[in-house]
Length: 514
Image (tube, rainbow, N blue to C red; front, side, top):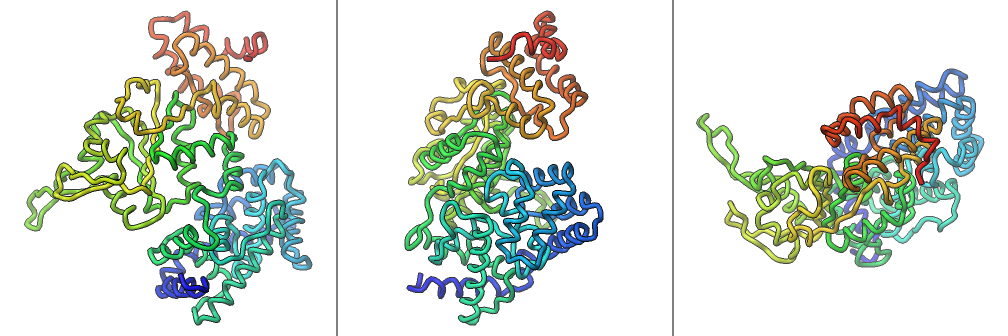
């Protein structure tokens, strides 16, 4: 990069703005539509009209700005406290206050436990500021702005800074970015343009951003190898699991680049994998998801011949890359993280599916010749593998020893962290009137462990429903839990009868779980 980082930034932004129609479609049009919906919600608050429906429309699709948990929690609170919500909206739109004071006043009306972390609070506050004028008050998302500020030598306020102060700093940085580009002749317009450019630069949506991104790892203001720890804390709070567990997962992934989450059904393995992919900030083109099954093959996963209609209308066979080969080749053109998610990895015939890739999973710096193509192939170091494994179907002990040596295995069991106590924590936050369900769940798993061992348990996700009621609990039990128990207690009617919902509900107070 040039001695002045703004020169290189301006050069790349100039390229990003060359196709103005494409830029507007990606970074402006949908935000303007969201801002219009927010404006209608703010107008409803000012006029004294009902605000519930306008608020839900404001957060509706398309919306990639706010974390769905953040706005779900906010909307749930607003439904129960409509007058406080109205006062919060009036505060954020009060033109008599400066922007930092608006943010602080808005947040005063919202209880601490509703939005939790400072990042989530500021995200919701800046979302509503967009309703005033998105070109003057662009939405704030921590990761892209922190990346840009590090590269350009303008870090945000330190730990302990209030949300209002952080947003004002973000606004000042956005204006400076605008001025620096305009001084260098870049045809950047308002602050919404600037926001879009910052997001493109920091999230690598275009190939031209690669050199700019590389600067943060090699020179002044280098970005740490792992994601921001403050944001990791926000993710831990969102997921109701320990931050130390997530930090360990990221370390294992950095160390071996291949991890498997294993455990009984319903323990949130796939959900957690998807959240980690989002946290890593991978672009859609940098991720692939597959699910293994008994019929899945090397030709499906890596590369194989596929029939298609030829030029003369007849059937021909062409060599086609599978998801693994496609993603690996894409990763070679980028220095960004790429992730291949493999769901139910143990349901496939792994030696048949992986073939020579078993070697490359351990020796990433070497090349092999693929089965069907006369070409050398390698697995780049920036390609990560996140897999899940249901141990009710097949124990980890039955997985090929060579494969086990190449992956880190992370247990997900109801009787140990991070899953242990998760349902109780979730119910306390979402459905405190249904806390007895956690007792029922604990007693059920206690009996299953005693009878079959820890691999035959049920995870909490069956019960983690936003609208959980006594009626829906019985539906879940009848149509999800009971069929699973029938399979385990085949020809043991007495054992099955002990684990009816009525029996577990009736005994929860007599023998509470330890």
